[in-house]
Length: 356
Image 1 (cartoon, one colour):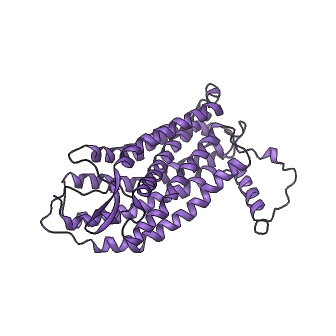
Image 2 (image 1 turned 180 degrees about the vertical axis):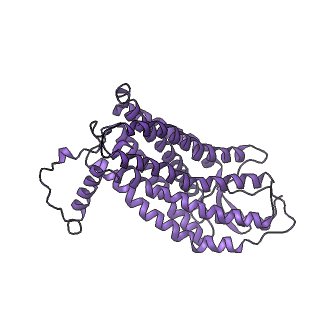
C-alpha cells in the first residue's frame, strides 16, 4: 500500500487530476507543509482573479455575438464556442477555490463529478476551438476562393457539435473515475483509477498530446503558411496582423508549455524515474504555479481573438453603453451605422486584423 502519510499531499493540487502519486514507495514521509500552506493561502486568491477577469472577458464576447446576432460565419461560431468553453472552465474555479480554502471537499460526489466535468470539458473545448479557429484563418487567407463554400454557418454548426462531442469523449475517463474519498480524515475529490490499469498513463499522454503538441503543431503549420501570404498583400494593416499571429503562438507556448512539462515530470515520478522528497515537493509547487499561469490563458483569449479587432470592440463599447450609459458616454461619430459594424465581413477578413 502507498505510504498513508503521503496521501494528503495530493489534496492541494485541487484541479490537477493528473497529480496522482499513488504507488510511490519512500523510506520516510515527505514534509509538504509549504505546499499545503501555499494552496490554502494563494490559490483561492489567484483562482478568484482568473475567474473575475475571464468571466467578464468571455462573457462580453458571448453577449456581443448573441445580442447583436452577428453569428453569421464560421469565425463567429468558433469565437462563440471558444468563449463558451472558457466560461465552462472558469465556472469550475470558484469550487476549486473553496476546495483549497477548506482543505477538503465538502460538496458531495455529484458536485465533484459535475465540477470535474465542467473543468475538463472547458479545457478540451478551448483547445479544440483554438485549433479550429486557426485552421479557419488558414482557409480564409491561403484558400480564400477554393474553400469558401465549406465555411458556411451550417457546416460550422455541424463542426462545432462534433468538437463538443470530441471534448466530451476526451473528458469522460476523468469524469468517470473521479469520485469523493476519505483519506486520512480528509475528504478528497480526484480520479481513482483501477489498480493495474493503464488509465493513469493514458491521461498523462492525453493531456500532453491534446493540450500542447496538437494545437501548437497546428498553429505553427498554419501560420507558417499564412505569414508569407500576408507579406504579399498590399495593405497597411498586414504588419499588425503578422504581429498578432506571433503573439498568438508565443503566448500559447509560454502559458501552456510549463504546465505540460510539469505534467510530464509528474508522470515520470509515478513511473519511479525519481522519487526523492525534494523532487516531489518541487513538482507539487511547480504544478500549482504553472497551473495558475495556464489558467490565465483563458483570460487572454478574448483579448487576442476578439477585442483585437476594432470593429468587434465597437460592438463591445456599444453593449457597455447600453448597460452602463453613465460610465461609457458615446462619442460623436458621423456616418456610423449598425450595418457597418459587422463583426466579420468577407471583404475585411483579409484586409484587417480579423485575419486571425
